[in-house]
Image 1 (cartoon, one colour):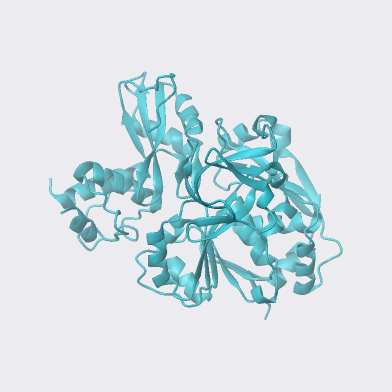
Image 2 (tube, each protein chain N blue to C red):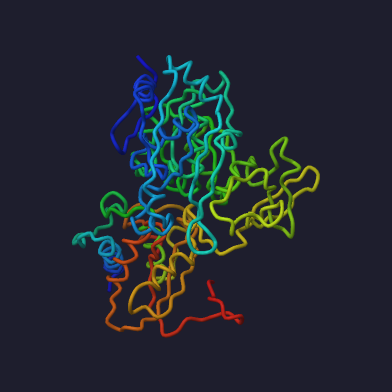
Length: 75
Length: 414
């Protein structure tokens, strides 16, 4: 699975647990809070799940806001 | 035009002091003794009625479920109890309101705090104790406060009293997103912010700066010096202050940076024993049930400290000695969450624990041993969501074959 697909799968797991519809289009420009509707609890869960998949704590050096920034941290 | 009392961006309403006074004068006010304030304004009005009419009420979080409330107050008659009060004589304008709220009076206010034995416990305070740390003078008259705490928690109560006793405008930013917060700070010319480190982390990266902010206060969690560096960019004119407060004791310490010292006049009422911060019972509220009453004159806060100097006493707070999980400043009692999980048919054993997290400090997670293999994660999540406040719900659920225990047979939480 490509890295962006991994991110999309994780996002959709979190959205589904909140009772939201899964998202189809995720690009590097997609904003985690504004477009994917992740609040701070969701973002905390997101970091843990991404770390489980990639071994990287993406928020360790400050806040990331877009999918592109997540990709930079895990590449 | 009358001065602004409360601007609530998320509820899209605002109230002036004139409207507030008209409302307070319009009694009699009927209130539940266990007050569930759905709107911030309603909670603020309840605080004012405690100050003005010397009533005794206990606040419930707006997001408590009916099941949680039933468990907290098992007696249905007690739950349904109401009181009625009237502001007498009517308030004659803002100056009169300020003079009367500053008199404080004999009212009492109760809060629920995360308990160590399963359920949150009720702690009742004289409003005068909570008002002790309020400073009022003409120097504070033009402050504008960003309100960033849950209004039904003690930190929210203290920020509210500091603001209202100086006749300040309050801008509610609790629950807003990053953009909404920056907009509110700019639009209202906010001068003071008091919030948890998690709230400030939400404002990162500091790509905007708000020059009007002159004071930034931290509470509820350990402050990260790196975060302060970033915040200096967002609030270039601000001074940074760290406070130590707990639901049991109210505000007792303050620090510039990470090193705490004891407030003047309280030196004999705070001490450190076995590296743990202890406060004297005279600083505490009354506990709702006797099982939580301090055994002698000193209450162990559960905060483990490292001493920097003995005289005067200065120290850093290292961590909590007990098992509460701090999720962005909110304390989660794993035993409470475990009890909710165990109440589900098909759940055999559970373990709830905190996992370190760079956003919230900790994230609640759990291991579950199923007795019924057909029970789904979705069903467990629904059960949790309908029985617990959102921050208490485990975000990661691991299905395991067995739960590890310590040598004494207790659940291993780390």
